[in-house]
Image 1 (cartoon, rainbow, N blue to C red):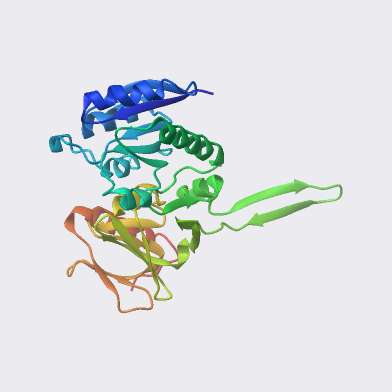
Image 2: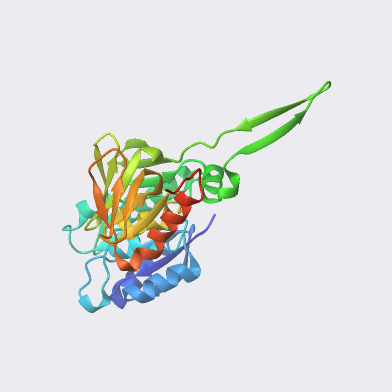
Length: 294
C-alpha cells in the first residue's frame, strides 16, 4: 500500500534531499512540498497526506515553521497525518516527543535512520484503530466510541428506545446515554476521565489544565483551542480566551460582573464579551430543562 507524503522545509535544497531518500521506499508517494507555515498548512488540508516531513527549526525565521503547525491541523482535520521531524539540531527533541511525532531525524539525513523512521510510521498506521478520530500529539485526547460521540453531540439522542418483538408480547428497552470518556495519554500512561467529573479547562500557554470536581488538576499538552474543536458543544463551551466550562457544572451566571460560578465550590470564572453568545447559550439551555424561574 502506498502512503502519500508532503515535505515542509524552508530550504528547497533540503526538500530535494528528503524527497530523494524517500523515493527509495516504494510504499511512499510524493504529493507536494512547501517552504513556509501557511503554504504547508494549506497543502496538508488540500491533499490530506498520511505522512508529513516537517522542519521545526528553520534557518529562514520568516517561514514560521515550528511544532505549532501540528496544533493548527487539529483545528480542521479529524485525522491528522503522521509527522516525522527533520531538522539540524537536537534542541527541540523533548518538546517534539510531547506531540507524539513518529520520529525526530537530524540533518543531513542518514538512510538507516530514515528507514527506521518509515518502519515506525508503518507500525503507527497499522496500530490506529478504525474508530479513533483524533490522536493528541502531546497527550492523546481520544473519543473512545464514535457512536457515543455522535449521540452526545446530537441532543435528539438523549434516550434511545428500542422495541424488540417477542412471541407473546413486546419488550421495550430503554438505553440511558453514557457520559463521554476522555483519555489523556502520555508516554504509555492512559488516564481516563469521565467528562461529568470535569469542571473546566484552563489554558496554560501550549498546554491545558483540566480541573476535576474532586479538586485534582490534570495537565494535557494540548492547546485550549484544540479542546474547543473536539469537545462536544452540548456539554462544553468556551467562555473566555483561557476557559472552557462544563455547562452541567454551572451554578450561577452574573452578567453584570461577567462571571460564571461552579457548582459546590467557591470557584468563579470570568467570561469575555467575545464569548457572550456562548454564555447566553448556557443560560438558554438551563432554562430549557426542568426549570422554574422565580
